[in-house]
Every structure is written in C-alpha cells, then in structure tokens.
Length: 369
Figure (cartoon, rainbow, N blue to C red):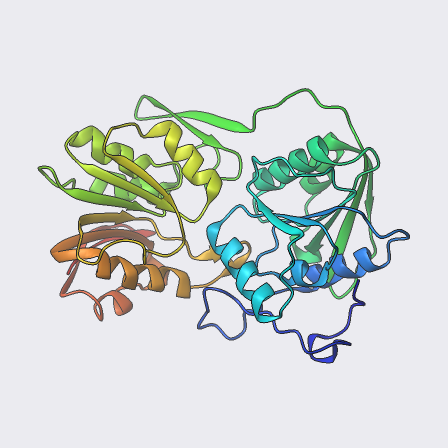
C-alpha cells in the first residue's frame, strides 16, 4: 500500500496520471481531491482488505494507488477502461490481480472494501450502490468521494436505501467522503426506466443520459434530421438509448444501422430499443475500427461532459473521426447548444456546413464531406 503523497514526491518514483483521450483544456486534471481523499481513507483502514473494488475511476488514479494484490475495477465506459489501462501501463503498475468488470458483472471474490468516486448522475450512483451491496462481503464497506460543491441530500437518501450506517466525513481540500457500512437486505430491483416517445415505449438502464425522457436536444435533431434513401450505411453516434437509430430504421427498413456509444449501459439500452438484421452495436470511444469512407450518413448529439466537467475536445475529436468515416459527399447532421459554436470547428473539416434548423437554444448542422 502507498501513502498519499503529491504525485511528484512519491516514495518509489514519480507517478503521472494523464487524461485519455487527451484534452486541449490544460486546466482539466486527471484526478481531483475526491480521488486523493479516497486513497487517503484506504490507507488509513485498520486492516488491509483482501479484496477491493473500484467504481468510476475516470482515468486510473485510484487503480494506480490502490495497489492491492486483487482489485476489480468496474468500468461503465470504454474510454474509462482505456485510460486506466494506459495509465497503469505507463506507471508500470499493471498487475495480474486487477480485472475489469462491467456494471452487470459479478466480482470473482466478495470485496471487503469499495472505493467509489460519486458520478454526476444519481441514477449511475445507484447502479454502483446496488452492485456493491449485492456482491460485497458480510462486513463490506463502501467509501464514496465527492467534491463538496456537488453535495446534495439525495446522495444521503440513496445511500440510506442500501446501507444502514451512512456517515459523512469532515471536508478535506474541498472534498468529502460518505462511509457506508452494514448493507441492507434488498429485494431484487431492476434499475430500468421506461417511458413513451411518439407513442412508443423506450426502455433504458439507469445511468444512461436523460433518465426519464428523450432529452430536448435529441428531440430537436430527431424532428429535423434527414433519413437517407435506399440500402445505405448509417451511424447513430453517441447513440444513448438508440432513439435516433430507431427513428432512421423506422423510416427506412433497408438501412444498415450502426449504433456507437462509449457507455456500456447505453449500448445495452439501445439493444432493447433497436431491432433488425442489419443493426450493429459498438461500445467504443473512437471510430478507428471503422473503415474510412464507408458511411453514407451519421447523426449525432455529441457529448461534451466528463461527469461535472465540460470538455469541448471530446466532440471535436468525434467530428474529425466521423469525417474520416464518411464517404465523399456523405452527410453528418449534428445538434448542438447555440453557445458551443461548433461551426467554427466544423467548417475546417467539411466541404460545406449549413444550418438546417435553429431556435434560441439549439442548432442542427448539416455537414457534407
């Protein structure tokens, strides 16, 4: 186990944790004081846990410092897993005892301790609470870290659903911990939302963007996007629950539809909503696996958040990769918040960028390669 020291002063050698994919915003770090507080708490445990599990370790800070012989790491996104692997490898901290799990996977052994950096989504927080409570040892303890400015009473209320003993720490470097003990016996609960959209039932797992409705930006794109004719190849990029892919397929059953998202829970949700012999699902955060010049059309409501942080590098990277995937004269249609000003970036990539529709809040761009 390692004591909590500044990264540049670690006892063995300097540890460097980087953001992957890289961001152009130099103010964004790969860890926060909440991550540091979690490792501080782990190091102060009276007994070294035989088995630990990590949740929402964005870039690998927890995995690098929680250097126990057997550690499971629950990764909800492909980018999270990729970043952790790269940072473990670059710091020579990869061990055979560390395994990656999806939120649906059962740990190999019952964990004694869990470290959870609380996500922005309360639904995703509940996914992690349920996972730990279902799989931990009898005396399992879950330590949750968050920045004080992100506190809400709902965090305590949710934690109390799954644990009898819910304690909040003192503030440290503008962060706090929730110490959760004594798991409550819970009836089986499916963490799934179902709701109507255009008279059809849409189903999605807890933790997927826009919990109980199709978000207004996606609705704006859905009403203003064009569906290609004929047997062509299309992509719903950052698909979420798959609604755009579903609407395209409903309008043209001959389409070959590829639904792509970084999120495991999003892809599993899209599988419930979009059916067809020529429907394909891809959990990935890069489009490098697709053949260049192979798609006729791409629809996208691009993400620009990493939990509480805004990072415009994310959509810009997606636009560049989508451009490479499109055939000559292929089309990408994007919905964006007006204030993000994506057009200044898009006109550098595409031969033409036109506004299809806009209002006070959103704009739909039609980009032709």
